[in-house]
Amino acid sequence: MKYIIYLLFFQTILFSQVKSIYAPVEKQMRLIPEQQTKSVQEIASYIQANFKGEELQIKAAYFYVISSISYDVTYNFSTELFSSDEDFVTKTIATNKGVCIHYAKLFKAIVDKLGYQCQIVTGYTKQNNQISNLSHAWCAIKMQDKNWYIFDPTWDSGYVKNEKFVRNLVSKHFKMLPSAAIISHMPFDYLWQFTKEPISNREFYNGKLYDGKPKINFEYQIEIDKYLKLSEIDKAFESSERIQKNEILNDLILEEYNYKKNIFNTTRLNKNVEKFNEIVEEYNIAIVLLNDFIIYRNKEFTPSYADAILLEMIKTPKERLENVQKEFFVLGSIGKENASSYNSLRASISDTVKQAQEQYEFVKEYISKSKKERKKMFRTVTWFGIPVK
Image 1 (cartoon, rainbow, N blue to C red):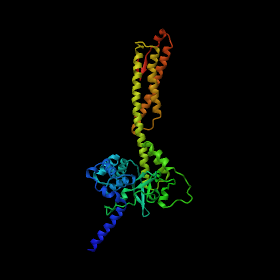
Image 2 (cartoon, one colour):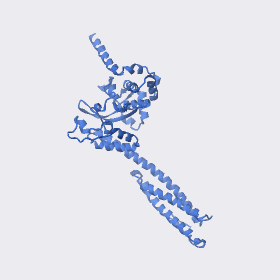
Image 3 (cartoon, rainbow, N blue to C red):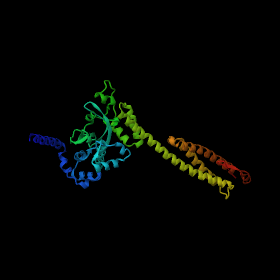
């Protein structure tokens, strides 16, 4: 009997700890109809209908995530390497399971629907002065007071013991000040430290700042605003630069650095391939126009047109080919596997531009002569090695 009393007492204490911060939202969030838990939009709509104000709505979203999602200790990340954010969230809602990135993405998805500015932050952590060998993901929200706060729904939902998830709702990592979060949560990219004096990875390891470290004034909000306007490829590039600058001390940081570089390189490569295909299309159009002109010249410019029209007939493909050549010259790498196509097109463009220039010079000379002299100018020419009249 004493054991039962102790257990009930323990549960009461635990409940009161949770209730102290989640009391304003817990009861109502536990009443959410099952049919309204099938999508982010329905969850957000329920929160908006039952809670007013930033603090309560964010707290309701946070409580929903930490109380409904269980940590998946058997999760294999490779199964979702190429999943979209929407797929991540949909699967999380359907299974009520996931790891840190699922907690973070679901929380962000709900907060986004509520109309607040939320970012997912990736990094690594330290507990009891021990650096984790796993990367981690959490969230940051810019609230109405214009300050950023840190939220880690994974750590507040429970813990893993003996390879099993134990639900234990706490609020230690709800709305943390960046200065408090940085003790245990180190972003890979120091942009998301939200401080004018970002610390280095080495300082995070040591738990103290370097003596004599030069003072800097990193205007993180200005930099964040600039960063959010960038394309995905530019975001990856800038983030990788900051990661490298902050010193790569472990495999987790190196993996993130390589991941960002890979995004940058792959995206750039894909864009180059896309541009290459556009150049090929434009080249083919110019070839058709030039070929039409050659056929027309082969007929000794019959039927005859005004000199201005005749000049335009060759000037158009000539200029289009020259533009193709310019675009090709500034085209970056399209990958080793496409090297043969790249070299072949380069040679073809060069030859065709020369052909177009020769035809253009012929027309300029042709229209400068009298009608009698013009007839003498027609002779056999070659088009890609094929004799034409």
